[in-house]
Amino acid sequence: MDITRLTKPARKLLKLKTCGAVIVAAGSASRMGGIDKVMAKIHGEPMIVHTLRAFQDCDAVSEIVVVTREDLILPITGLSKNFSKVQAVVAGGKSRQESVHLGLNALSKKVELAAVHDGARPLVTWQLIDRVVRAANTYGAAAPAIPVKDTIKVVEGRVVKSTPDRAKLYAVQTPQVFDFDLLRGALKKAETDGAQVTDDCSAVERMGMAVKIVEGDERNLKITTPMDLKIAELMMEEAQ
Image 1 (cartoon, helix red, strand yellow):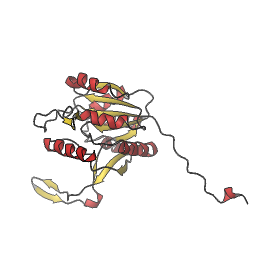
Image 2 (cartoon, one colour; image 1 turned 45 degrees about the vertical axis):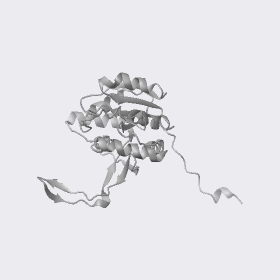
Image 3 (cartoon, rainbow, N blue to C red; image 1 turned 180 degrees about the vertical axis):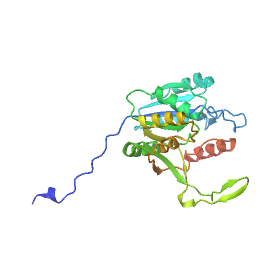
Image 4 (spheres, rainbow, N blue to C red; image 1 turned 90 degrees about the vertical axis):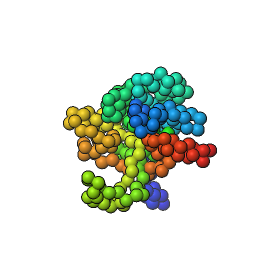
């Protein structure tokens, strides 16, 4: 009997494209009460070190560019010497969009996928990064997200106008990963149109591109306030 007729053909796996990461750490940290969050220590190390380590440990990422403020280029360059994947530390622009664009320009020509991550998300894991990169490798655009827990209200003038269905609401995290040319083109189009987008997914969505959502991680919080720093410290201690 010819057993080949009785078995299904093996699923063809897509070859993983070369992915470069842009770590955006150029913000002013205006809500941190004077604390420079990029260099703020968590569990004994600057926040940016934890972020870089996760990308260094992820085999799906081949190179890293850090975008930061002018005054932090030298300190972060010094810290980056321990991470072989860091190719450059460059100055950011006047907006997040501009900073991401500058980071993309600093990646090598071999990069086919671009992962953009907030430097202020130091608890990201290499497993989450890998999951999003592989989804983008298949779909062209992907981002991690978690369902919102609170009821969300649309408010105008301190008056509730509507209550969206919570079952359809997700909090989107980073890294957000895209086909390199798609992301660069989307950011350029947003700049030309004068559109201010809150994240990179928004720029791509304006181009009519669907973004694949993958399971995020509740621990992957963004450090925005001094309280967030304390929470991150506790989470890291529990993980030891």
